[in-house]
Length: 130
Image 1 (cartoon, helix red, strand yellow):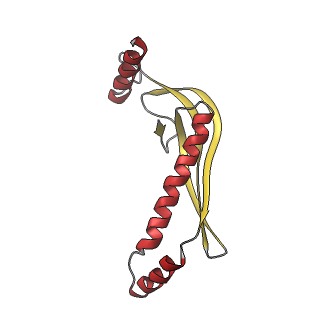
Image 2: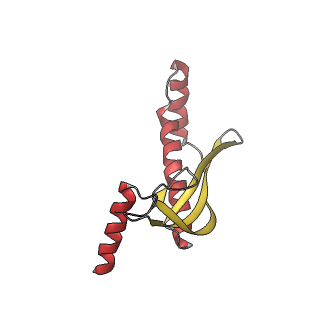
């Protein structure tokens, strides 16, 4: 269950590529948040109502992207990116996209192994023995 912004994952070998996956949402703040935010904007600084809106949107689009990836049989996403935009100055669009892949941890003694991949390989081997 890895999502990374890099094109590969150190210590893991990509064994299959399932293609691009994405999650998207378009949101607007409620009238109360807009009202409070307009007063905060006068004083300057962070507008907490909008920060929370963008944070929640990001979590939602990542979950949607991950759901698409698991439906295709992936256990990781590489090259993850976010894109945001504005629609009609009242709506916020947040998009998350990446490449769904199947990765396998590189075990101890193999070239490219990392402490994380070694531990992951051991855990997977123990699960298979059960």
